[in-house]
Image (cartoon, rainbow, N blue to C red; front, top):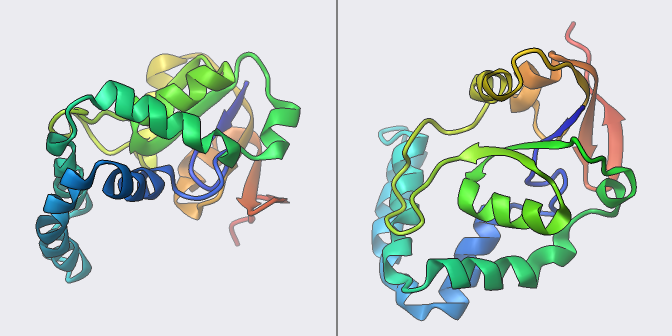
Amino acid sequence: MNVYDWDNTIYRQDSTANFVLWLFRNRPKTLLSIPRTLVYAIGYGLHVVDKLTFKENLYHMFVFVKDMDGTTDAFVDSHMDHVKEFYLKQQKEDDVVISASPEFTIKRFCRKLGIKHVMATVVDPKTGKHTGLNCHGEEKVKRFYQMFPNAEIDEFYSDSLSDTPLALEAKRAFLVKGDQILDWPKKS
């Protein structure tokens, strides 16, 4: 079984940032959320607001979107060209994607790609509220073993060293930098 991060790994760029910018361009009412987002972004930058609080306030923009299902589908359709070629060449039926991005967007991408196993941050698409922990770092390991208690990870791919906890669980791990696939850095 191979496990992949999503953003900057299978998907070229950050899908959440792309979605937010796409919403600003295609659902102009979401622009009303910019002042709120800026306040929380400054708080996050000053370390007085945690990441989860910042993300929930960024995602508050979802309240301005009437048809989030149709909107998300339109975004995904317009961004399928962001899927990296290396993944398409080696995709397997039992692949797993684990991401910190909102589950409702990642699942749609994965469904189109035929990826059945997806774990991501659970976010209410109508309110932007999280209904669980951010799927990041050690949380990815926890979620993986909740879904696959006896599984072994053959290969793990990610663009971020914050995924080291999951990389350490794999027989082989790879760091994805653009279109380069590198061996995971060894701890010294």
